[in-house]
Image (cartoon, rainbow, N blue to C red; front, side):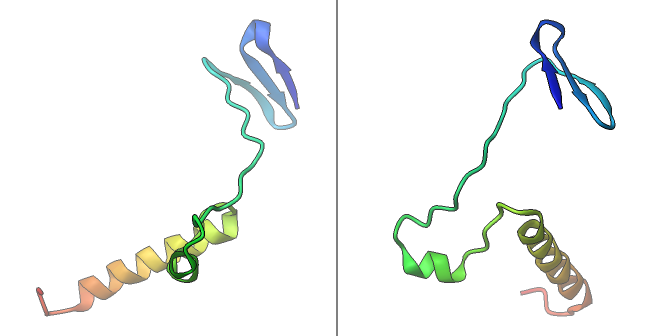
Length: 72
């Protein structure tokens, strides 16, 4: 990958991308702020597999909601 700031252009193997603002995110670590209960029950969203797991859970909940007759 090549960044050309004077042209606002990022050149990649799959083509060039123009941008107005470029933000380079070098990664992060999930912080549960020392709360073991949150760490146990929360779903992290830092990797693609984690995001896909969350997406699947949301879709499962929507499907379950569509199949219920109980409005409460």
